[in-house]
Each structure stands twice: as C-alpha cells, then as structure tokens.
Length: 211
Image 1 (tube, one colour):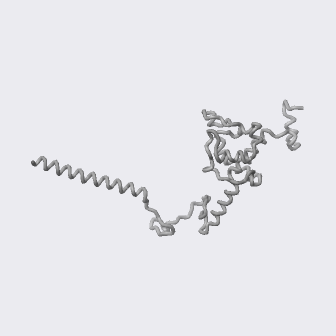
Image 2: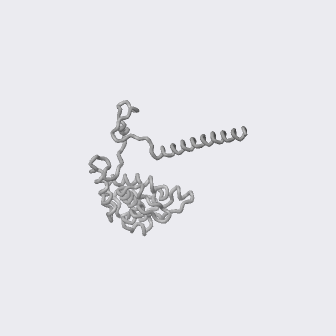
Image 3: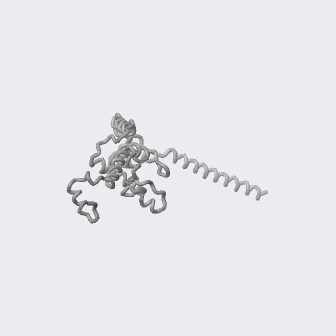
C-alpha cells in the first residue's frame, strides 16, 4: 500500500515538473514571436541620453524604398519608387552614359556578374572554372546586336541557370551594368579606324600588326 502511494506521489511530482517545463518552453517560444522592443521615440534607460532612437554610425549611407521611406512625409521614398518604375519601363538606357555611370556599372558588375562572366565578359569566370555551366561570351555577334533592354531583362529575370537579380540589384544599377557590358564589348570589338590617331599609331607599331 505504501509503495503504491509512494509511486503515485512520485508520478504526480514528475507530472507537475514536466508540465512546468513544457509551459516554460511554450512561453519562451511565444517570446520569440513577441520580442521586447522600443516604440518609436520612446525613452530608454539603457543609453546615457535616455532615448531609444540612435544616431546612425558615421559614414552610414541610407538605403530605403517605399512610400514612407527616408522622410516623415514619404516624399523621398515616393520619389525613389517613381524612379524605379521609370527605369523598369525604359526600353533603352535612360541615363547618360558617362564616366560616373560606367564606374557604378563596373562596381556592380564585379560584385554580381564577374564570378561567372569574368572581368573580360568572355564567360570564363572563377565559378565556371570550378564546374559551373559557362554563360555565353558577351563578345559574340548575337549579344553585341541585342538591344539594351534584352540585357536588362536577363539581369532582372534570370536566364537558364542564371538566377534573377531583381531582388539584389536596383533598376538604376541594372542599367549601369548594361552600360558597362557595352563598354566591355566595345573594348574587344572596336574598329581600328575609330581609334584616336595616337592610339591607332601605337596599334600599327605593334609587331604583327596588319599593314
């Protein structure tokens, strides 16, 4: 009798302990959904100035999109959205092809495109050398003749094994990459007669140059 009573008491004790542990786990799980946070402009004793809103570190660049981005009135965010829409609807490069645009395109190209397409654009990137399917060279006649919008759409939507980059490259940067790809194509296929006289003279002086 005593043994049975003792076993029942032990079972009740273990059951209570297990229930407490499970409720604690459930509470911890809910805390992951309802994490403690500060409301906008609320006070905070954690910081010496008593404010929860913190000044961005020096050198920080704002990056925001949407109707309420960057300003309380939403004007800056709305302007950015309109600029994105205009860039997405353009059928040819809507930006002046100047040194600034080419430098931006080169920077974005080196980040997102170079691993497969290579610095030269011939499709012999480091990822390809390790077994990834090689993309076509930009210097083939077909891709030299496609409209700018075709290259923009491939960046946006992907092609074959290439993934879409719309979620990583903003519309304006896609056009900058298009401009840089055109510069790469020109660097390998420029007619000799279009070169400045001093460069053409240097080319003619190279061993094996055509008479």
